[in-house]
Each structure stands twice: as structure tokens, then as C-alpha cells.
Amino acid sequence: MPALVLLGAQWGDEGKGKATDLLGGSVDYVVRYQGGNNAGHTVVVGDQKYALHLLPSGILSPGCTPVIGNGVVVDPSVLLSELSGLNERGVDTSKLLISGNAHIITPYNVTVDKVTERFLGKRKIGTTGRGIGPTYADKINRVGIRVQDLYDESILTQKVEAALDVKNQILTKLYNRRAIAVDQVVEELLGYADKLAPYVADTVLVLNRALEDDKVVLFEGGQGTLLDIDHGTYPFVTSSNPTAGGACTGAGVGPTKISRVIGILKAYTTRVGAGPFPTELFDEDGEALRRIGGERGVTTGRDRRCGWFDAVIARYATRVNGLTDFFLTKLDVLTGWEQIPVCVAYEIDGRRVEELPYSQTDFHHAKPVYEMLPGWSEDISKAKSFSDLPKNAQAYVKALEEMSGAPISAIGVGPGRDETIEINSFL
Ligand code: GDP
Ligand code: IMO
Ligand code: MG
Image (tube, rainbow, N blue to C red; front, side):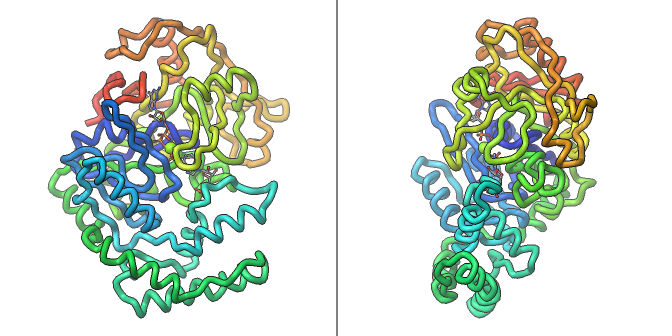
């Protein structure tokens, strides 16, 4: 029972942090495999609330080794302040491992992210402004800086020079900004080297050895399926692969090792930033979902756009990730609606469409076709088993399961670790 992948089935913020933390006590390693500090994962343990951006949520489980894989982009200053913030709260972070092949988010990548968004104006993506896209662009352009480069000053200087060569031309001539000095960047990056050194490791070797020894490894995705650079709503996406295949490339583990892929699925839908969203609500129902669900971004503090559940998206997530299970979160937020609309298909230019269209133009024109499901008014936050749920809540879950293409194996009825109904065990 070695490797599991846990990922977002919608546009992020599905409750991945809580789900990972829940399993953290029973797994040996929790690995982030893509993204960076654009993620915001909330974990509630007793009366303590943690917001994790770069660190895997398994860091809060004492027996678990947290790993930042090669596919992640690392902002060293954010990482160090996240670590010291946790240390101040009594969390032991000494087991953390960071891949020497992970790429570094440099200060100039953050600058480029911000100026590019400003330049795009109305066409902006609504990025988190954390330098994610430009850092992945440098990686693909082969001018990226990796964690291991911090330990060779001459190589680091050459690489920063190469990266800034073109960027300074763009910054000064196109964006009318000041050029960035190579020395300054090198000095800042070298300042992180000693502090990060205890954590840097050959994580590919460590993880594959662990799997050979039958240890349990959990891969925790950032973002969600529809923010995937290949399979999401491009160009309104992030610049990495949160989908299941990303776990293999982003951690250096072969697909034959992965036995379970769990999609975290919110009982309704949210999205942050720009881009199409067929079930988005602009009325008091949307406002109520935002208020009751606390739908405000953990990273940027932006209000999340809210809408009803979209089964077309859930089916798509099942397909592109090969999902074996769903973890349905935030069912409690839907308590109190007399009827709950669920999007079962789209209408696109007069045609009924059952599956997510590959054409961006079609998706922008998609109008939701709703089926109304009866709601419930009983408080479900104390429910411990499926049979504790009111009949209509059970029927809602069963209907979503049927439409979505994989079994719902757990249900979240509140933000806390123990506010979960387990139906099928994940381990
Ligand atoms: P992530 O990015 O996928 O980890 O999700 P976020 O942490 O950004 O957003 C999910 C929010 O929902 C957090 O505030 C969680 O504490 C909260 N949450 C997770 N599961 C549940 C649930 O089942 N019920 C309720 N009411 N809140 C939940
Ligand atoms: P978690 O892990 C929700 C969105 C941004 C923007 C787009 C690109 O908490 O689910 P980027 O800075 O990545 O280049 O921005 O992706 N985005 C997220 N939305 N949850 C996230 O992470 C996100 N990470 C990025 O809002 O639309
Ligand atoms: Mg989040």
C-alpha cells in the first residue's frame, strides 16, 4: 500500500490541507510535488489554525517526514519565515527535506510576475504575484536557479547573469523599470545557503528507497485540476501540473508506484483570479456561500468567486487524474438551502454537452444545465457516519457520486481534523 496522490479536483481551495493533515498521522512521508507559495492550505487542529503555503501539510504530524520535491518552486525567504513561524508555535520542522533540484523563486521573478500582470491590464490572469509563472518559465527556458546552485558561488553568479541578461532588457526597455543588479541577487541568495543546508537532500533517492521499504508516501497537490497548465482552463491557470501525473515528474517516482489517487472535491465550487466559471453566482446565494464557507483566499486575501457544484468538472477530474476516490468537503456549508442546484451538463450555443469541451471558446460560452436536489436544515457538523446524515444530505452525496465517476470515500462536515465522515478507508 505505498503511494497515494491527493489533489484538487476543481480550481483549488477544495480542502487539500485538511485532508492531507487527516492522513498525516498514518503516513511516513508527505510530499509537495508542484507549485510554490501560491498555495494556501488551511489546517485546523483543536483550537489552533495553521495556514501553510509552501510546506506540506504533513509537517503538523510528528511521525511524518515532509518533503519538498523537485517539481516545486521555492521562495527561500518565504520558506524560512514559514519554518520559524511554525517553530515559534512549537512545531518541530527538523525532518523537512528539500530537493536540490527544486527551482528557486528569485526576487526578479517576483518583480516580473507583478509587472507582467500590470502590463496585461484587462487581460491579466489574476496571479498571486508570488513569481510562480516566471520561475517555471525560467526552468523551461533553461535559465532557472536551483537549490543546489546556492552551494557553488561561481555557478550561481553565472546563472543569475544569464537570467538577468534578457530580463533587464525587458524590465528597462519594455516596462520602464530599473535594472536589477546581479551582485545584489547573488548576495541575497547566498545568504540563504547555510540556513537551508540542513534540509537539502536527494529526495528522489529517499522517496524511492522509502517505497521499496513499504513506507507510505502521500503526494499533496497544490492548486487544482482546472488550474493545471495542460489540462486546466488555459491561459487562466497556474504554471505547473497539479494533476496526478505531476506527482511522478515532480517527485521522481514512477507511475507504477501509485496505487490511489484521491480527488478533493468541494460540495460547491469556488475560484480565485480570472477565467471562465460556468456555475458562478452573482446573487445572494453566491454571497451566502462565500459568507458561510469563509471563502476568502488564504494567500492573497481575495474574495473567492462562488457557485454551485459542477458535475461536468468532477467527471473531467476523474478522467484526467484517474481518480480512485473523492473526498467531498464542506457539505456542512450547504445546510439550510431548501433546494440545491447541481450542474449536470452545459448548454453551448443551443447544444447540450455532457463533457468538458476542449475548446476554450466553447467553455467560455457554456451555460449550466441544473438539476434541483432537495436540501436539508439539520446541523450535520456532529455527524460521524453516513447514516447520521439527514436523508436529503445522503441523497445529495449519492447523486454527486453517481455523476462524478468515482466513489466518495470521505465527507467533510467542518474544518476540524475530526469533523470528517469516513466511508472507505484510504489506507
Ligand atoms: P486547500 O487550498 O485545498 O488546502 O483549501 P483552503 O485551506 O484554501 O480552503 C479550504 C477552507 O475550508 C479552509 O478554511 C478549511 O479550514 C475549510 N474546510 C476544509 N474542509 C471543510 C469542511 O468539510 N467543512 C468546512 N466548513 N470547512 C472546511
Ligand atoms: P491552493 O493550493 C486557488 C490561481 C491564481 C490565479 C492562477 C495563476 O490553495 O488550492 P499563479 O500565482 O499560480 O501564477 O496564479 O492560479 N491560484 C490558486 N487559486 N488556490 C490556489 O492554491 C491557487 N494557486 C494559484 O489565483 O488565478
Ligand atoms: Mg488554498
